[in-house]
Length: 104
Image 1 (spheres, rainbow, N blue to C red):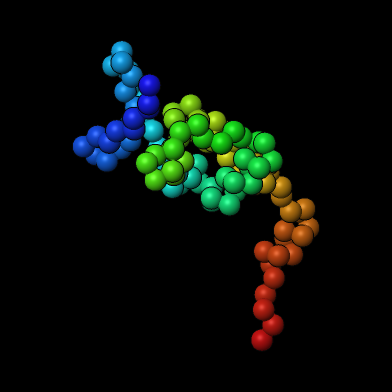
Image 2: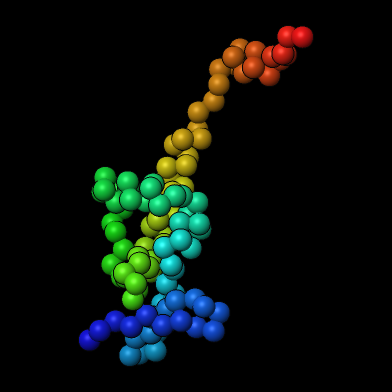
């Protein structure tokens, strides 16, 4: 049985199984925009094994994300974001930078 990706009236991608269950799909650029990451970051994470590559592709062989893959991607993006934004300047250095004035 071949999987067919369909489009609804809003242009959103979805899968519908024989039981009538509809699964929303996300285009590659749409998924990256929602996760707030770049394509380079996504490919790097896949290469490093931090996240599995998508299972489905559309007719043009572009990656499409299922809802569960989207949740995993957004969770990883949030975890990576928390790691990189958790640093802070030491108080004396922050004060010096804040009080810095350009000399005339």
